[in-house]
Length: 249
Length: 107
Image (cartoon, rainbow over all chains, first blue to last red):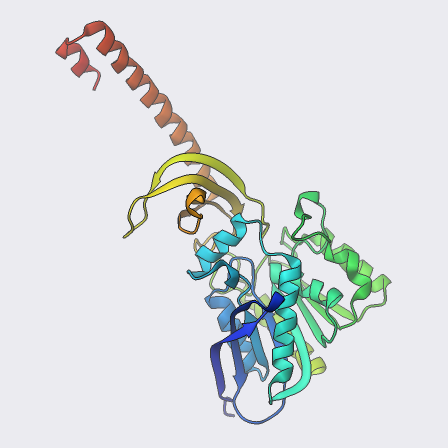
């Protein structure tokens, strides 16, 4: 076999409220029509791992774009920008939804688009993915990787920036949803995942959840040895790409 | 656990990182969460910043829970022993007024 080539670069994009920021865009070379994927970064920042993950998805045949959700904080290293965002209480849901929607529009506007767009997110990006499924139209596949605070037990987690627990909007989800979770995770913990799954089932949503023993939060992340679980991550990625194949082509 | 929960401590002082100049700091943002760099599942993280100057620069640490507890104890111990030594020095200055042998014995 031969591996397909890909092109990857940082591009300018217009996000929520017309704000101009950066996104990392990787796609297969060639003229074939492909599905698109918006890759939503994890809370620590727009770091090397999320950029590599974007390229991985392109390597598997999709046009993948990862918006820099902290670009409004200006220039600086990913960790410094992440620290500023944390100190300011995080990013607002409305802003993230606007940025994700802009990326979806960007993907569909490309000449290689087959018209289908999925969304995948990790950690806080998993929550953003779930929320996007509730609030944005035109999504063909959702992959929530251990998104915390989908079900909210601590009232302090709700505020002006994040006013609604995504689980409370579950009835609005129309796209198929894949969820991957570690059973040792604290956020979301097993009980919260149980409740989310029970509600999806009750509402008749198209979903599949896979839950891994011996894994906690961020078990795909090979750059963090205490979190990474090679076997579970390998199986999880297979499920991600099977899901994308089914729904994005 | 990837929360946005941050404890803010008001400070007066300065901080310095490798290759940088001293900077004023007026706030410590303290959180216990997944670290960015340290190979720990969770870390006690402190970002020393100067909010009065925009808070854009920081001096940061990410340490284990055990390290944080050890650090707390050592800070308390250092303050206690320092307070004790300084109060003795002050008393000596007032009462001895130039007795070099007794002042020197304090250090």
